[in-house]
Length: 149
Image (cartoon, rainbow, N blue to C red; front, side):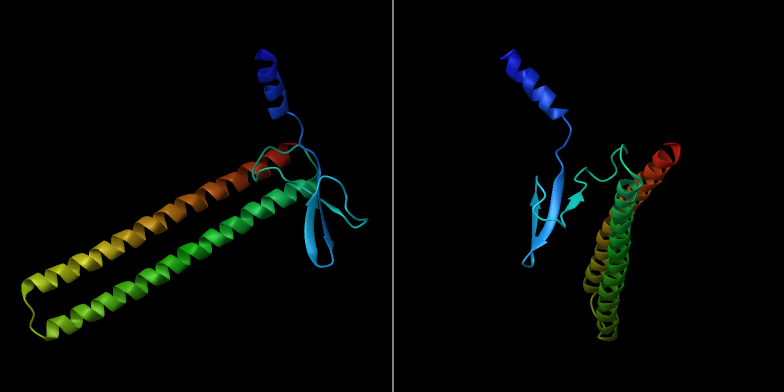
């Protein structure tokens, strides 16, 4: 039993095998062995891990983090836009309702609905902002790591 645990532990810390990417007849394949003369070696390490490779690997990791950051920025702007559209629509309903001399319960319910929608969007936006902050911190740490090496 102890031998299996030791083998498993050694396997967990072993070096990763090279992964090659090549395109044949319009189909992209990934393999442990080069499948053609134009096979490209791909870095399969998790993004943001410590550097032990070349400048190209470093740039690949930094660029991947920056792409993720731009995508999160896009999600934030989309959420802000969606929030504005939905709140404006609810405020238009509120304006129409006020013109028809509604009961106070109807006005109160619509105001609560507007506040609830704003709160939901704000929570989503804040979560994405925290995600963006984390990605920027990882990018900065990775750039600092590479500068030290």
